[in-house]
Image 1 (cartoon, rainbow, N blue to C red):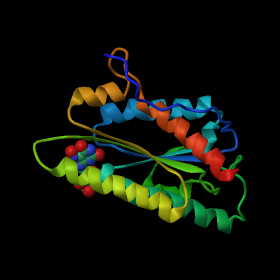
Image 2: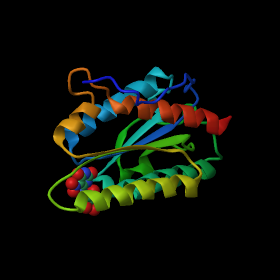
Image 3: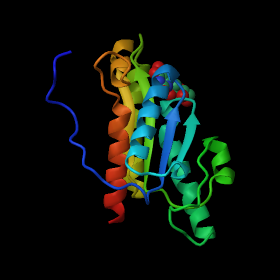
Image 4: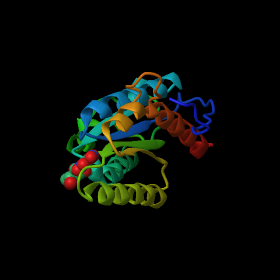
Length: 192
Ligand SMILES: O=c1[nH]c(NC[C@H](O)[C@H](O)[C@H](O)CO)c([N+](=O)[O-])c(=O)[nH]1
């Protein structure tokens, strides 16, 4: 694969005080799983504590914006009722369904939320409509809520493009790593 000028220039930031949410779709799970692993591994490498990473899943990418909003809102409600508290040691890391969030996740505000999905072009216009709606929905959610929402949605034209961006092909890069870095950077800068 020819080398490209494209790609982020990540910065080094200390994520040890951050609380990060991850919401991922279950569609195309053979691509979702390595993306999720790459994201989590990068968060841990940046010092984010395992117990401060909360993971939830939804059926597909269409549900990501509302799931991000629900994750944010549930943590805000719990944080206010529990008297706030730092991101510190208040959380149990768990892979929970969205409905379980309000009961199972301890209270502390999120510093950033990462939305992960994989949209692969099919025969119809379904791909275009979902891609457009989800990208605009996630952008609106972060601006409305004032919390960084990292765009971790692949919109690809075929399976090989998806595999390449999940780091599954020889010499390919797992884009989840970039999303983890972005979440830490924005989380740190937001709290600065
Ligand atoms: O995450 C995805 N959801 C997809 N559809 C499901 C959609 O996101 C919703 O979950 C569903 O429409 C129910 O609301 C996809 N396709 O249809 O191709 C896809 O490629 N990726």
